[in-house]
Amino acid sequence: MSAARNLKGLGRAALEAMRQGGEAMAAAERALAAEGATVVTAALGAAGACVPWQHYPAGDVYDRRSHAQFFYHAHPEGERTPNEHGHFHLFLRAGGMAPGTRPLVLPELVIAGAAPVGTAPSAPEPHAGEDGEWCHIVAIAMNSTGEPIRLFTTNRWVTGETWYRAVDVIEMLDRFSVSETGPLGLLNRWIGGAARFFRPQIAHLIAERDEAVMGWRRRRRGKAHVFEDRRLEVTSALDISVAAQFAAIDAALGAAA
Image 1 (spheres, rainbow, N blue to C red):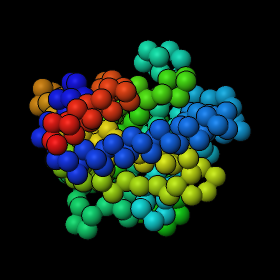
Image 2: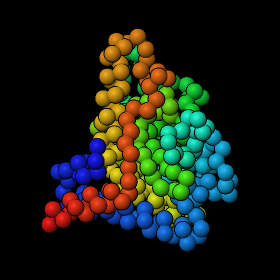
Image 3: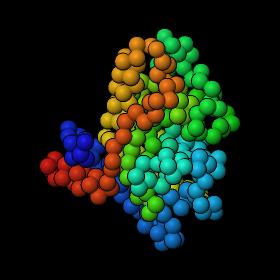
Image 4: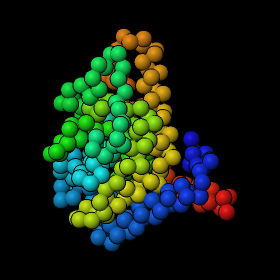
């Protein structure tokens, strides 16, 4: 789906908020470049090389105010998509969700969040004071030069998350924010900007995620626990381009003038 199609029906305020997100990304990239760094090398820090499955930065980035969390990691070379170096996983923990938000409970999943976290290859690191629940919002794949190239969502077993309906996860997307202060301020600014810049695409992928999971469940008629079925890993994906997104936003703003 093209960037332009994803922006249909958006008002000026939403478009301007997206553009501000893109400008925040660009500003963070310029500041990092002045230090000889990229978004990816900022995440890796002193480690330099990226060890498969290891989280960067160590312990993840976690914002105690918003309860947002993210980390960067890479799969082994044979398990990556073309041109991908690694990807960021973005989460919101229970403390940051809207009051009254409830997990989706299926007959085969008596208690949401019951899967053993140890089996989740992309689970976030634990943080003190949290109740253990988290929701995966989206993953942002990066190339080796530090450019975002793809957005994707995953099945529940990948991150060990508690599963929420798409409408609730999209609402969580608007609550995702990380502090832009401190040693990782530029990286945090880029991540927060990306969540705003690509918001329509992320929301679309979250809706597609639910369609893919429920379709998989219907076709197998309960013979397999869909959330734990290793045959279903990536539930929706979309190639992205920063330049194309800026062009689509500017065209939509021009049409709305």
